[in-house]
Picture 1 (spheres, rainbow, N blue to C red):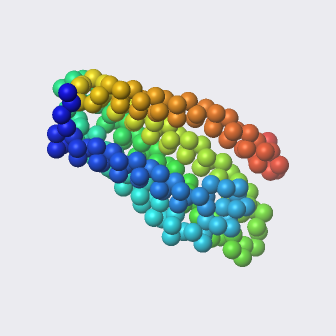
Picture 2: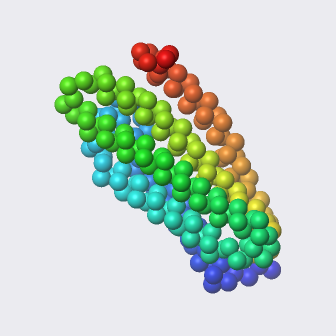
Picture 3: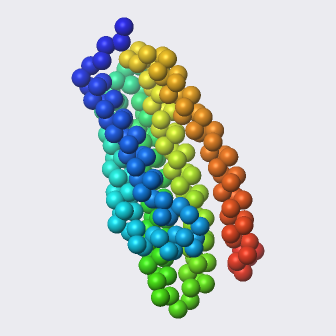
Length: 204
């Protein structure tokens, strides 16, 4: 029988908070997920919400590192390598999300410049390329998130604190989400080709 300890309950609660911290910000970032023209129109007016979303993502990344540190000793007793990989994956998750955040802030800056711009075509061209770059950094950030989740589940499998059925379900869910990334990448490639090919510098 698996007995929950106060520390285990605390980590479980933090994992629920982490899940919410991954869902809510991405909903708030909808103004920077549309077509470049829509991003230029909606990003600047939604700058406050976007700032909240980026702050939540940063806090969530730090929370993930905190969870990794809190479980490090427990995981290390079963496998030192697994404990290290969980921590490394958490740091990579924060780093890739920071790159994604930079791209989002760039789109917001372009949206501000688009208001009354004397060269709107130039701003739009920059928005197209920045949005394309942001899609790929965002995809990388999602890949890092899935990597941490899988590393965490692998570390849990090394021990006996969590029922195997729960771990199997969680691992399957993460693998299915991970499998969807190449499909998303293919869609991104098609979108980028449609958006970038008409630009005069696209074939340089």
